[in-house]
Image (cartoon, rainbow, N blue to C red; front, top):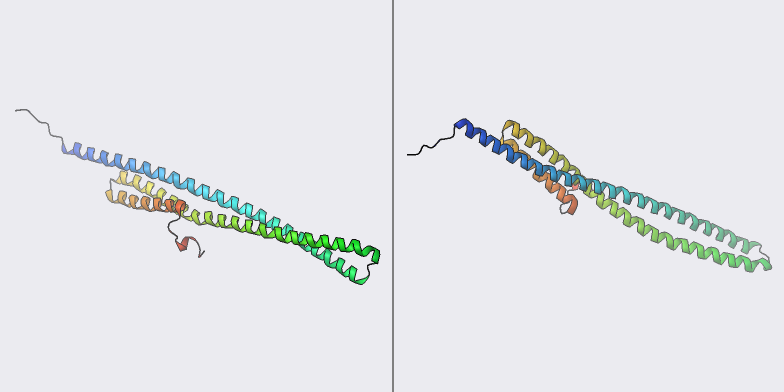
Length: 195
């Protein structure tokens, strides 16, 4: 009869503990990958939001410049109209009327141009607002994933399946928040301050 060596109970316990530690370490590595994805998404959203804000501000400054020019031409036109009505000599009247027509055309041109600029500025503001709406999801996702990594490390030290389960819940919610930052499937009103 062949002898079978049975493992000692302390070796079985150590093997089980090592197996648990390896599984938790592997899952923790996955948490770290998802955390990196969340950080990339958050950084991208912030960069795009700031860029759109800057471009929008530039458009509004350009809009203001057009408004100022429009008002200048309007004021010059109105002054010229008053001069024509009051005291323009017949010889100068033709030049004044041509100038009046030019001022009127310039005022209309600036009025039309500022409307296009306003549309562009509002589109850029919408882009900015879209990225601004994504940012809180990435921030919360990152925070939850960081906490999940810490909790899974603690679960290895404490050899606690309960703590590891808690880290899994945190990681899943963090991953959902990160995915929502990319795809905006959920719209949680408390993240947007009533927008």
